[in-house]
Image (cartoon, rainbow, N blue to C red; front, side, top):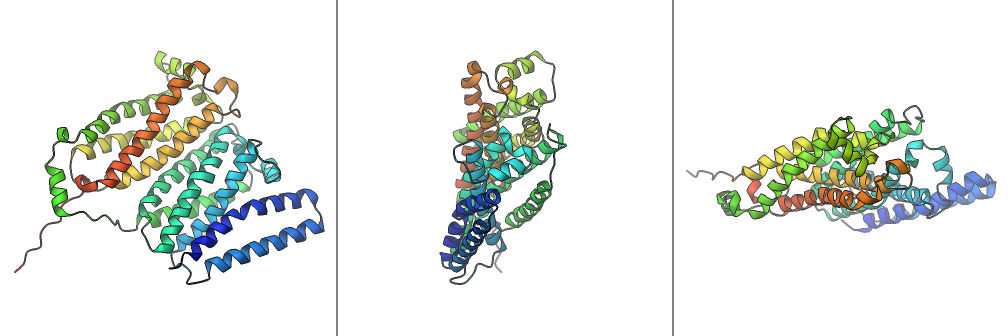
Length: 369
């Protein structure tokens, strides 16, 4: 398949920049000339993009078109984040004034940047894989974890936080986006795995004891304090009255008590899902033949990367009230612990995906008559 379809998606996504500026100007100018200019520009942009996408045989995978739309929206989210921080102006001013107030929180800023940078890159990679006929299951599972965490925290935070009573019709549109994305996640997960490992490699990996796998031993050692840290922060947001919980909140992460409820929901999601993940992964690293561990680490590493990016950024962002930001004296410890908590699962995911022989089961030899 020609790469022209992917090129068309890339061009279309970048065209969201002039489209946002034109329609924002149209709304504020409210003139016939602005309306005519914006309409002609939109038609021209869509015509050019369609020419690139359909110049040769169009992709048959429906996710190509889903990711094409999402790439367009990702650039718009990046524009939203940049304008929220006053880096640019005049692109989505009307939207920021009329949209749900949740988008103007520190957490809303962080997910705008994550979607506009990391998700955008994932969409382009998956679109390129579709146009070249390659498998995109691995990057798709990583995106699945990132998206599901973002969606769960954002929706529940909107419902129970201080803005819970200020839900506009745009929230229903966001639910449509969630529904389509869940369908895309299910379609990605149902794709067959493309791992091809020789039988001898699987047998050699199974013969090695844990002491002869020092990297796996280090990951196992890490999983124990990671589980404890996950449970500890869950107890903190549940208003544990213990002295350690109170001291940790006061000295390192007062953002956990932010009334927007996003950090509280994030830690509860981590407690309910990351906690069991650490125990299951601990088992998978010690017992050979756990084929599910590669998919599980991909989903979890994507989820944790998104969660930690949003949590770290929002804890330090100026949109967070000063009393809930990380104190200056605790920033070094806060950054060290949270960055380490985010990066080690990425290394574990790379280990499981790049050398999966330990987790595969050897196929029995076929008997010949």
